[in-house]
Every structure is written in structure tokens, then in C-alpha cells.
Image (cartoon, rainbow, N blue to C red; front, side, top):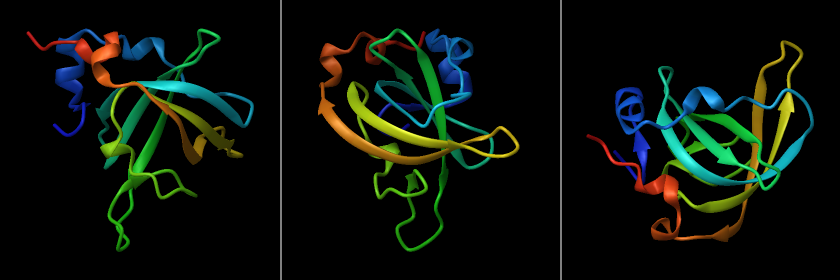
Length: 125
């Protein structure tokens, strides 16, 4: 596990409500706090965000096999695998023709250390 990234089984055991988070269906941007990260099945990392408006959003980043070898949005150098929970972000994305969400950028707004973030305190039993 790296910087709060959990496997699907660990996420289930921790009790994080993954099913309550949705991919954005419209719009192009939001601001949110990174509250959870879970490894996906297709060389991807699913990042979960809470917005100030009470929305629960999730986005995927995929492994970039170029020389940077990171999990980052399409037009960003930010390796989301390394970002701590509690960090606040300005996110941009694009809804493709087949209604998939493509994560474009992630710009850090504010870092709140995990000790101040309840979601980072989820424990595995």
C-alpha cells in the first residue's frame, strides 16, 4: 500500500462507501478534497473526492508507461499515487462521446495533513 492506496478488499474491510461516489456526468471541473484511493482492476488508481457542495466524485488515473512511470491525469505531471489524503484539488475533466470521464488535470490547492482528516483514519479490522 502506498500513501493511502488500498486494494479493493482493503477498501471493503475499511468500510469506505465507494458505491456512494460517482464519476462526473457533466461539467468540466470541480474542487474537492482527496479522501480515499483504491487500486482498480486495469492498472488504474481510483481517487475519491468530497466537494464543498457535498458531492461525492471519483476519477481514475491510469499508469503511464512513459519515462515518468506515474499514475497521473492526462495533461498533468502530478502523480496521484504519491498525494496524501486530505489534499484539496482543482480538477478538470472531459466527458467523451461514449460518456466516459477523462481526467485532464489536477492542481493542488491546499494540503491538509491526514491527522486532520477523518477519512484517513479508516482502519482495517
